[in-house]
Image (tube, rainbow, N blue to C red):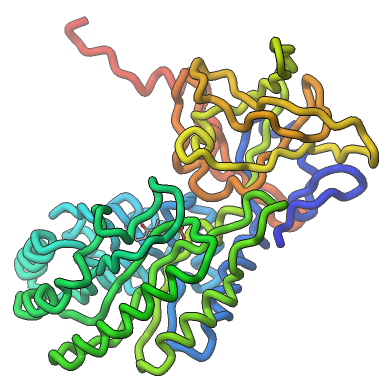
Length: 421
Ligand SMILES: *Cc1c(COP(=O)(O)O)cnc(C)c1O
């Protein structure tokens, strides 16, 4: 459930009608619902009640300061994958002891930044990274808590670009070598081995791969404990999928994911972390756009929008589906239409949907892309010199711009002409 509903024939975000925001901000823009963000966080937090746990929001899904603050105030920790994300989390008021540092290529500078600012744990992904962290921690006189990310070689059955748990992926160390690598880590100064990390991919629509991976993590916990390691924290990653296409079968619910965790690891006496990103932010956001033209092609109609692939790259990059709905509710029995929904960017890849059946709309009408709150604004660019798409947050009857659209001058003046020219 989200908080984007028609009321009196007009799409609202919580208590605010979308046309009011469009008039104030201009299109296109991203729009997030505070109530939906909070609700999604609580589904996990309450779903894990009874287990010692921390829900660390994977902030790469949507790292706007205001979004982070909503979640931090609800009690979320953060999963970060860069020094920039670490600093964003800190700036939003998240204490270091609630920040987990993931990612395959942490640099010396990023490690030092997080050690000095405070960190809950590093999730390590390779032996060279282990050696570097040991060196950096020792040089700073620190001992840092670490887990090692294991790659369980399970098929997440998701889009190839977002699967991370197969042996051909760059992530983690092969689970078959885990005992050897843990022994090495335990012998390194500056590192305190506290747990295991595992994240197998994103947009999973079935619990089976999670169950397979968790079983392997449980066996590994037992083996590592037998080897003398004090395994007391399991980071079980994120990756639970969301319903993009409402007519399709729905992915498992957060409560089912949480119950699976309880069933699999509940007996181990460990603290559990999870790192959901998409499920928290995805359906808490819309991309709102205006129809520029309806163009008659030879064998189809093109709906040309003022939003483009630079604003929302997921369809071009992952062949993803986003529901597109008119902001003014179609009358019952209104004429349907079929469109190729496209943006103005000069690439054929700038296509949001092909042969999409939807309510008929016309030039000047507003439409909303559903499920655009995760991996939307964060992946946007200014390709074709289209100023960065702004972000807006709604809270009940209030709304605020939480990242403005730059003016053309601001965009152009970021470039610097060298002195010799
Ligand atoms: C991207 C990522 C996540 C979040 O994945 P979602 O599918 O958005 O839930 C969690 N953990 C790590 C390490 C990631 O890279």
